[in-house]
Length: 109
Image (cartoon, rainbow, N blue to C red; front, side, top):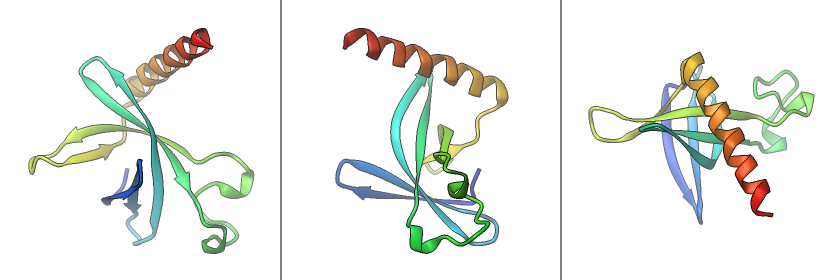
């Protein structure tokens, strides 16, 4: 998913920096944690500074779609949390869990 991750605390928000193989940095805010069984997945929303973008950037901001990622939270050998790309099966389970959470929230309103 990314070569390097850095956690930045911005008040109550957790901002994650992903660095790709070319050294480009991308920033995402942890919007919510979605529990699935014994695993946890983060819903990450891209943070973009319009001045930093140029035509054809890889973040998808040009098409007006929101830049959203799902990442599995794992603990590495050093005991630190890392975000990794989920398998297709895990992604499907996260989608189902997210939909259930949203249905539950709508029922409370």
